[in-house]
Image (tube, rainbow, N blue to C red; front, side, top):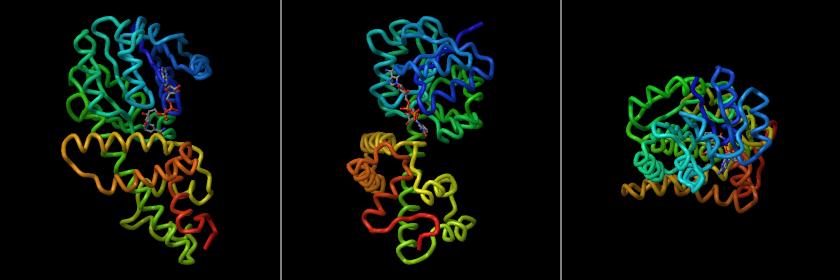
Length: 298
Ligand code: NAD
């Protein structure tokens, strides 16, 4: 039976890997954090002690790493996947990285007979746990069809959007929409609270209208309770917006609202909030307005 590899067992990778084990895949896993490897091994995976070990054992290797430099390091590094993989290996990179780098890494792989599909995800930790992520893929359609059954164990929507790199372009579009939604929710709730209206009642009044959104539904409780444990960290969203600005400038597209929200997120980071959930961006608005948006506050 073929072996599937999984590298990067963080907030997202850990539950995604566990879902593959649950679905019956023979999974070999690695992360630089040994506790994470041990936890997924306890759920039934084989523990590996290096990237090279995963590459030598697996035919399909999923990566779920923070950003472009880590993907370059794990795939192209001296003792990385490419240096140790058999020709015909497929890498499914599910990290959210620069589409420009995704294409460069894929080209280096292609030269060695290894195919890379970029397949970033949306949905966050809750959907990673449920196995209901939205997965947006780019790459060769025949290879995509081969790995689709694996992706379907982690996501409820799996879409091939185009050539390699298209998955990450789609993810950047997603991240621009999410960031701007969070900023809009923050502005609206700070306005309501400072103007003397209970933000929880505002939420209930507007959620069924045009302002209702998935962001509002998933994030309002964090705002109303003031618990900004991640979820999706502000520092990762800054990374995505930087990748969006770089990719947009490369094709001569200005993103004025994205640039503004990027700077607000940088203010949050400078204030020590980088590790908070991205809904914690509202704290930056609260500091600017001298008000806290919490349940029962008006
Ligand atoms: P994370 O930081 O929790 O996990 C990344 C993991 O990669 C860590 O366990 C880290 O130890 C490991 N790692 C780093 N360098 C490594 C290396 N050289 N070799 C092996 N392992 C290495 O991040 P996350 O929240 O799981 O996010 C992973 C990716 O998914 C990011 O690109 C992120 O933008 C994207 N994403 C996250 C969410 C979310 O809600 N957290 C949602 C959608 C997409």
